[in-house]
Every structure is written in C-alpha cells, then in structure tokens.
Length: 265
Image (tube, rainbow, N blue to C red; front, side, top):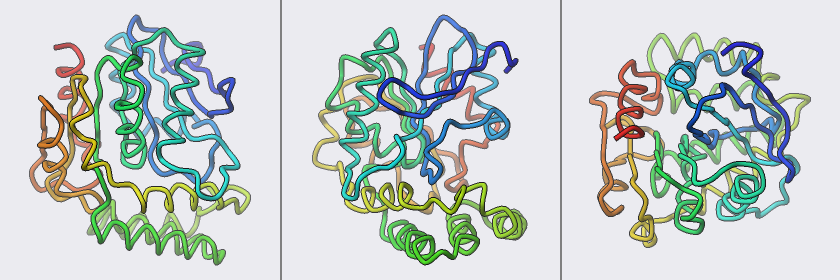
C-alpha cells in the first residue's frame, strides 16, 4: 500500500473512493454504513488487512462509498445504480464486486440489475435483509445521531459489531472520537442509508443473481444472521461460515485466503 499506488477522490458522478494498488485484476468494494460520504483515508483502511493482501495478490482495489448529500428516501437500488454509472464510465468491466455489510445490501441490487458489470460477487457480513435486532439497533443509532448525541450513536453501533473487552475499549474510543464517524456533525447521509436499509428485503429476487457468488461471514452475525439463508436463495452460491464469529468476521485471519480462493477459482 505504497503512496505511489494509492489515489483518492470522487468519480465523475460524485462517488467518494480510494484506489489502492495497480494489479491486473480489479475488485470494487462497496463500503459499509458510512456517515462521512468522503473518500476513505489510507490510515482508515490499514485496519483491514485483507486489502493489503489483495494488493499483494495483484489486485487493484477500489473502496467506494455513497455520494454526499443524499436526498431523503434514496433507496438501496438507486445507490446501486450510482455504482453502475461509475463502473461503466471509468473502469474496464466486468469487475469483481465485494459488498460489505450495508454495502452488501446495495450489492444485491447491483448484481441483479447490472449483471454485465459483475464477474464475481462477494457478499461479506451481509444478508438479503436486516434481522429485527439489527433493524432496531440501526434505527436507534439514527435517532441518536439526529438528536446530536454522536458519541452515544457511535457507541451503540459498536454493540452490534464487538463484544467483551473489545466493546469496552471501542465504547471509550468512539465517545472520545465520535467526530471521526460524524465529521463536522454531518449526519444526514448516514441516516438516509439506515432508513434505506430498513426497507431492504431482497429475498424474492435472490434467484436473479446469476454470477458466481460467495456469501461469507459469521454464524452469529448480529445484523443479518442467519446469513446461510441468503446463500441458500442464490443459485450455486458458495457459503463460508465462521463458527462463533459475529459481524466483524472480515477480521478473521482466514478471510483473505477464503475470498482469494473464490476469486481465483
């Protein structure tokens, strides 16, 4: 992840992204729930070891967020269409797609509505809909953010991702540095994402996804579990399920090896 191989900015249709590496193959990652709607910073991605390993495996990696100033009521499908515009205009397609969490919810619509753009699809720590406890938590986060209680919103969100001592430390850090999640107090874009995902349910369209697909995550995912139900609905989908793992399954040491095995098969 050298500086010479990294570039961040906005697509022609205003999607914030960071590009890392200059490999022969391209993977576009639809980022998870995001309140910043600005290009990810390299230091933010250092915690994601799988990106570094993808670059080492000769991939060009695009981590892409949603455009800023989303209008109220903007849907997951419309966000997917935005990604399609970027990829058609600026990349050599088809490309590999990985949807993370909320980004995965968008990736369902992308794969079904724009199949010509997708080579392989990875749905990581996501599902065809939020489960009830995941919906409840995210709506509570939106309500806290709307009320200006940004530290509490950050801390509440972490409760669905971490547990034990890791959660204790994360709560302290998020309350101290909530501005990193809500820069300048900007909250509206993240709330639009949460409200869109609250309505998201792709169950009846799963069979429309006809590209090679990997569903990967923990067997105890707080937000989307059981994710094996998602894999069962997609024709020919592969499932990698980590035992006793939650929403942060992408931090598992096996994660990169498993997705590379799928991408290179």
